[in-house]
Amino acid sequence: MKKLKLQPCIIALIILLLSVTCLAAGFGFTKTASAETRRSQRLYSHPYLSRYAVEMDIKSDRSIAVTEDITVYHYNNTGFIRDIPVNGGEIVKNVSVCEVTGGTVSSVYYDVFVEDSAFVSIDIGDMRYKNDEHTYRITYDYILTKSQEGKNTIALTPIGTGWDCEITDISVVIKLPEGYIDDSVSCFYQSISGKVETVETDTEIIDGRTVISFVDDENVILNYALRFDLQFEEGALTAYFDFTPYYFVIVAAVILAIVLALKFLAFNKRTLTPVVNFEAPNKMSPMLMGKLIDGKIDAEDITSMIFYWADKGYLKINLDDQKDPAIIRIVKALPQDAPDYEQIMFAELFNGQDAIKPSFLKYKFYRTVDKVTHMVDSRTKGLYERSSIIISFVLALIAGLMLGLTPLILALTQVSLTFTILAPFVAMVPMFFPYVFCMGLVNNKFKSKKGVKIGFICAAIGISAFTTLFYTLFVPSFLIGIIPKILLCAITSATMCCSTMIISRTKSYVEQLNEIVGFKQFIEKVEKDKLEKLLEEDPQFFYHILPYAQVLGVSSQWEDKFENITVQPPQWATCSTADTLLNFYILNRIMHVSMSSMTTNMVSRPSSSGASGGGHGSFGGFSGGGHGGGGGRFR
Image (cartoon, rainbow, N blue to C red):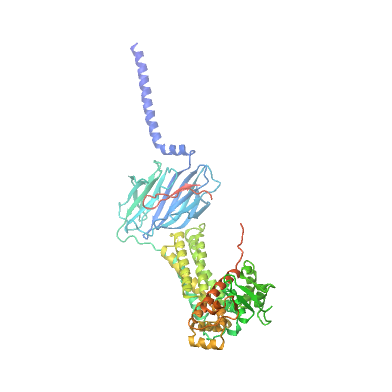
């Protein structure tokens, strides 16, 4: 009976031993396969990186050839975006992406762009991929232009915290240049909050170079940066300097030199030699003179014709209503030898009536003004040499294109053929305004006052400064540094302004300007005794010159000349109060008011009538304090 009772105990003991053995074996198996189990458990729950392998080949000039093999599981996503930090002065070049399948490399869609100036972003993945796993190989050159950590230290962050998913398998290989201090590497995980966890690395010599490696296929990494601090001997590291942008600066400087050479050697060699005279040259009308002095017909050029015709005896002006003086026709039509534009303007001014008021012309006479302006413009074609205008504009255009093309060319040739940047072309538009302002300065050289000229210059400088600021802020510094960007803008602006100096006047125009400028100089510089003598010969001399002084911009100087000279009232003026007309100063005030009213009404025009999407999410984020890192995000 005792023997039978021992058998169940033995059986129970054997079962217990077997259970413990199986449990121990199961525990070991579970530990070995834990990483793979976790990955399989996550396979269908959300997108993640099942492998992240980084290889960095560092040169002594702080340039780094980077290869990243990233295995991505797309969970309801068709691709991802890799954000590479450049906010520490880094340069990214030679970006390339391919897909790796079982050792075979094939092409894949990718696009390089800049959505935030702190990152170079790469959009990767075929739009057809979804709920599938793919491995992508990203290669690029990552160049450190600054040494914030010290001249003998390089701090690298191969894995950044900017990924919005988990990473389950990490490996990093760093090939070092000569001068590395053995066993000086510090490697650690660093979270956004600053928590630091030191990790171990392996160091070996391969083909005469020190290679540091790190592998972590056990932990699930989320929002942690992996950082390496590397120490080098004194003088082992040099500073990288990219001279390429300066080649474009040199090209821009050559264009400016060409502009200056053409100005002094080929164009604009005809200088003015004014011929002083006290009469309008060739019986020229004030309107035509106004066109020739500054290249355009202004509102006062139109109004001047009223006082010109009045002085000729073709009409009278009643000044009883200073703000709306009556213009009274004396002749039915101008003489036949009068220019066609004068005859049309005179006829349409009165439109069959014997008297009109400027207020009646409001919003109506502008059509006649346009017609007459076109006729005068037709008479004055060919004021400048056509070849000089074309060359000036072409050189200005080339200079402007330098702003847009320089970053685009550098983006396509140094970063990626998929990287296009359009912001610099926006800067081309305001940069053409200095050209326009300098053209205005050239055209108004003989009419504008000193203050107006200074205004043109300040406007050109202000627009250039604004464009430079825009260009500096919106053209990525990893393409062009601050100094070459400022130099490029400054030289382009100078070229824009100087190219206007190439435009040359024709010989006939120079001859006309000689007489017009000489006539203006007479108005500005004539002495009192000369004026008194001229008034003795012609008591109406002041009023003969007044319309011309108006279009030449020297009417106030002309009036000041007669401050202490007795001047008779104009024969063409009528007024119910005769005493008023006897006072020269009161008359001038009335005429100024009347001129202003005429100008406002004659050229007035009726006013014309008529009647985004989501982003990609957050960027690369905290990199761990060293160069590199960043992160990625799914589409």
